[in-house]
Length: 114
Image 1: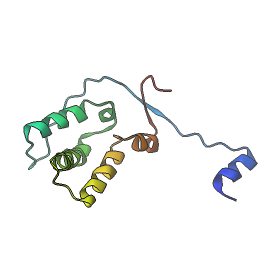
Image 2 (image 1 turned 30 degrees about the vertical axis):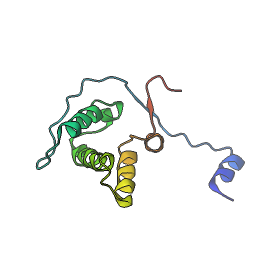
Image 3 (image 1 turned 45 degrees about the horizontal axis):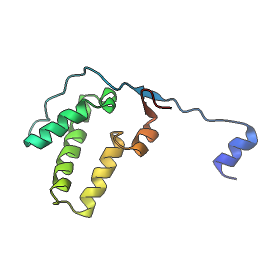
Image 4 (image 1 turned 120 degrees about the vertical axis):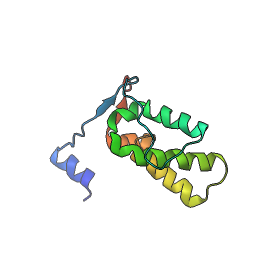
């Protein structure tokens, strides 16, 4: 018997807490991590990510992951990425909650979503 069948049999339900992400916030955009230099488009993406609803759940320790996502995005958009880079980009995006799968795994929902 799998877990879902066991839950149904016992009438048990798992309740996962949900964090509602505000659509707007006033959290300041941090500086890039030491040693990271962005191009103008990369700086723009950095700012957009830190202004996103997901950024309300990040702290300064996320800087390395966010900067890596930005740098990988830049390489992929320039056509310079290999399959491994695209895969790592996807994994980082999910870990940061930037994909629907990542948001679901983290228990996040956008404000006003059902």
